[in-house]
Length: 265
Ligand code: MLY
Image (cartoon, rainbow, N blue to C red):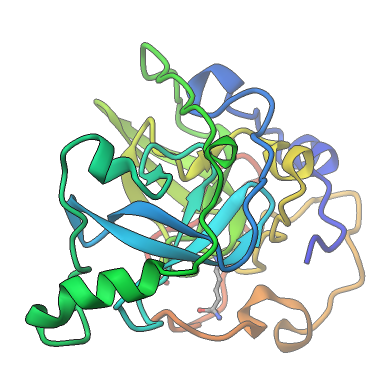
């Protein structure tokens, strides 16, 4: 749910700058999602990057699709942008002389794979070529700076995209911190990760943007914020808990333009 989060006001209040578009491996116009639920594709197995598997579109949000590898259980679903280089139409492996592989953790006896493969593709709807969009180019240099704002996938809850801040830059990697959360969701990633988006990308692409959390949220001095609402009634912490985060002690107010306290979760 989009809530009523407003980047413009938030950036003004936090006196922060958004990371420029040129930082990101994302197209200026977010790609259009033309996939349909239940269509089959070929996808790189996220747990075994050298292998390509049959996958089914089991969900979508904006320009992202949720995938399940055929022959795997429902606990290893993953999300990809429709312009991800990891996605191919059915027939790609055959065309390029590769073998379609069973997913890591194929739920049946490996000897059953050939017949499983045939069965899973028979009569199934295949996503047309046009659904697969061209991968955007990689920016030449790392232009991220500490304190810049962005939108980033919460990798512990990968259906979510959230307001975030660059907490550190080290060579080709950046440390992503989630605004209003105490560190349990932070991660280091390559600066050209497809999980990082410029401010405004969600609004542009029709993807929901989570509002910031409320832990260590920068407090504005003079101007009063929304009437305060209790954590349980209002925070994203309401959603199913897939993380090991513990909401420990409360925080003191933090300075508006400092990244939030990352010492505890
Ligand atoms: N129920 C989870 C959800 C946390 C989501 C945090 N993201 C948005 C940074 C939890 O409270 O652990």
